[in-house]
Picture 1 (spheres, rainbow, N blue to C red):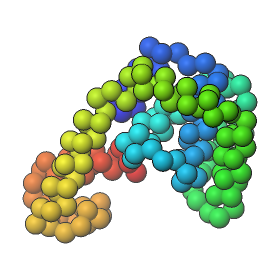
Picture 2: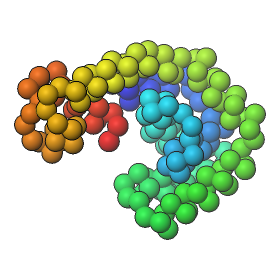
Picture 3: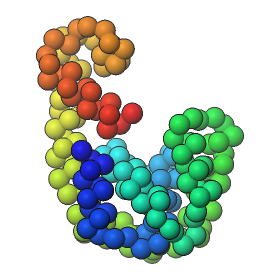
Picture 4: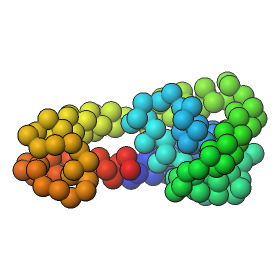
Length: 164
């Protein structure tokens, strides 16, 4: 649902090569753990990166995208160090005003519109499921019974899909 919203937004709001670089930099920040966005904003930004990673940027190309793809699928100390170095390099090459303007533009143009409500709904269901007479959320992920409410099963499945 979020990926479809973001893909539609990207089609309606063509991004410049500089914007693609900004999205790539934010993705590096997310992977490096230095991104201060909310969990929902991070999910949206990951979807934005996925929607634009094939588009040309000004500074960051296939090497950055290959590294990001690798870091999203595995994690080790050496890879975390490379991500850190690339994130610092990317932030150095992009000026702070360029990044601020990019973030202001995507907010003003409605990238996040309505998604906070969706996230709030799922968070409410998650809390309900966690307090629903069964056990921790990890039991449901492992397929153990205990969540009798079908709405809890649906919410957990959606949460796992949105935030693996």
